[in-house]
Image (cartoon, rainbow, N blue to C red):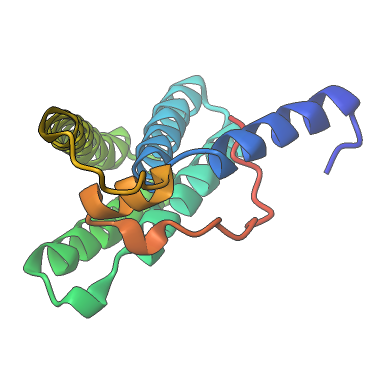
Length: 176
């Protein structure tokens, strides 16, 4: 790691941004990191730059690995198995794209990531709207229910609340 103070400040900023985000925001950020780095790999491939391409592929793989590891298979939902299969396919396409210098493999991975990211964005909007409706209903009823913490509200509206704890620092550098 470079001891450059500006680089370190940027890494610290990104780490604080992740640690202060809700679980749904973290997933969205991981998708964006993966997408940005696949796009970077495509640009590096077109420019004939092997080392920058390798860096982008590695960062995209790390983001997808994090998404894969975050899946909760204990609920037994079919969608978790489907997502796991999609993530594995994306990882395979990233390896193929890099090893065979295949723009199409990168584009296949990118297409899936963008589609999943768009869907995740819609889920986040829906969850936020549902939480807003619940809050308005509680306020309209004038219930004397004790105020719940933001984390508690998020747990009740977020099916991914199992990931609500403070994430362990992975030591990864997510900067592009």
